[in-house]
Length: 429
Image 1 (cartoon, rainbow, N blue to C red):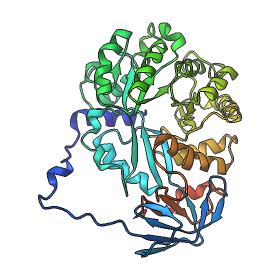
Image 2 (cartoon, one colour):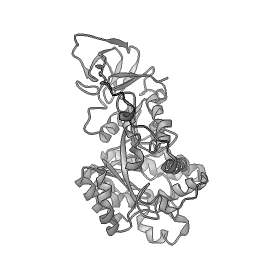
Image 3 (cartoon, helix red, strand yellow):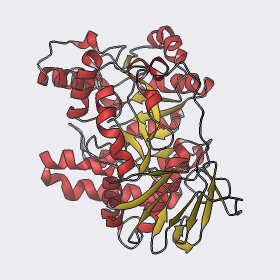
Image 4 (tube, rainbow, N blue to C red):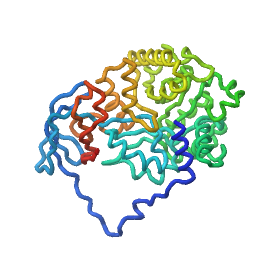
């Protein structure tokens, strides 16, 4: 989470604009819901997961079909266009309060990104506007509605810095068990879990920060607000989350952290190590073969977030060769092992398209592999109960069309021309 994200979080917690619930503004008269238009999507080159093939489809009740319907309301000419399932961003923080949601949600759709995972939200904050997201014409969001850290851990440092920058006099008590849950012991977990579970989160996030050196961290006052909970608590958190049908994603800071959270049973590693933390070297970022094998065995997915290296490298440009080399090495071995890879940017003012470019720059993936990850693997992992990310009979009729072939030039992803979400045409420009 960037400082801008923390600043927006700070402002929203105490000055978020009120949003009138849809039911409060509705007329007392009954409203007749019109059927979705029946579309004919004619021509075009359609991505099948590895390459483009010519095809045409019909859309009936928001679903794709090859069966010609008795009536057609509109024909859309897709000839000379390249059609992809919509992009997904599995790691961001820019829809987590009312102001940022109003500012950035439409931008997702304009970029052809229809699915987003917000990895440090909280139920109370998003309750006022979550109903305004999702569905035709709006980005669908997977919320990590419970973020668990230590009382002196990340993201407290960012939140306090954001408050100071905004000129707001706030302290840790304004954020603990509000913006995130402070879990310093098993007793804390036992006491607070009922309130966490009450919200029925679909995704829980745990913050683990160089757990092997946590005792030394706490001797360093400069690390206050940047620490994490004990990895020893993660197996219990995972068991509790899975019992209520939630998955667990883990913020990590080292290869050792990744090994610990993987063996604890988390479902998603939210970062590949993309900076060199204080006191560590690139050797501490290299995943062991045993960790990678365990990830494969368990089906643990990873979101590399390579794009966020820009923040560390802006301050430490001398680290670029070594940092990018260890990232490429990790990615090469993760890919060879078949570890599930998801695309997520963690860029507050960026998008998954930046992450695709960053992954391409490692030379580990081909363009078609990156497109497959961003348009099929990622959305299906985010919303496993939905038929998305594919062009198949009965799948959701969601697509983005481009003038140029994105597999030949990933730059084409920055210029979507036509978009349809769940059977309804979306204006891009």
